[in-house]
Length: 460
Image (tube, rainbow, N blue to C red):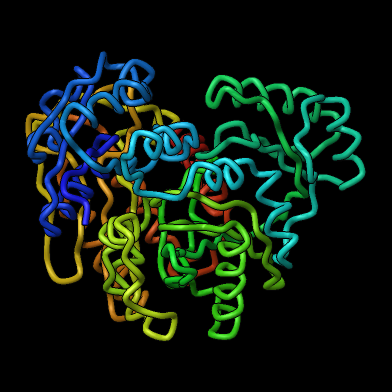
């Protein structure tokens, strides 16, 4: 078993990992930028090391500083969390060269599955259905347009090395292709240092369904059911739930088996996620694999009773999975709302600042993952995620009711958040009925704007 683990991350995921290590009896080392010197993860860890100035490129993305901190502290393992270096194959390989256990898959797997074109080709060869699209990276806008014209519009342009909605554009008219391709390419270059793109047929009114995978070093691979992540804005997830109301038992079993097949084809180890889109006719297509723990992993933990971070650490320590596919049971329904420090009324503009007051509700079936404390100042240079609010109910209706209660009671003073906006989403008739797709939030915003304009006109 790992004895001392360095957490190469910050915020709520760093806190989450530290708490899991504490339960396993593993010592922890936190790394922090100067902006995070008073952060909760720094206070909870057994040791802490400052790795640089506030900008991530001067701290959390500095591979050599994190490796030096690991070696100097005597840590024998690194957990990258999500974001930052979590899907950086060079970092994973360097850890192993330094005899440091990397809690995640091998670097070559991260590289092959992180390249969306290569990932498509890998799983397609194993018989996994993929969306019609390019099998090789595209660098030239004119050539890309010829391919898009052949696929038929709408198409979606994606960064091969992308994630989190960056380097991604939907093209509905061929006249817009060149401009949007160049915009997405530039954004990808700035965000990932890689401007290779690929193009897929865009499937309208689709659901975003992902399957959680666990794989050990001995060929055992299981899935832990699905999460429905269709409620998203500009490809950024806002609400996630498990299980999905769109899947019946037969389809869940089939998609789960396909997800396991995709993980085996990739030679995958540790925790990962196979992501699909599901069209209105219940046809599903692989879109990508995330080679790390997901932000929304907590909803899977709630319905399965498993601790995914502990399982990650056990797998990285060389242990076999202690359960088989037949042992996995989904009980109840879980929902997660991402509470971000942002102002929906001002175009979701980030709202960093000092937390003056904080009330986080509890109760049966309520879980809140956060690094916020009263008096803490959320820095402006990092992600705006403030808290992940999760509820578990005996069914979806109860989970929604609990979530409304928690969000109504929750108080975060000093910064603006999307809490009220999330409450409104959960009260929408289509959401309550489970009639959602990836365009749900944009349609809600459109209706909201039309209602406001109508009200303003009446007042005049």
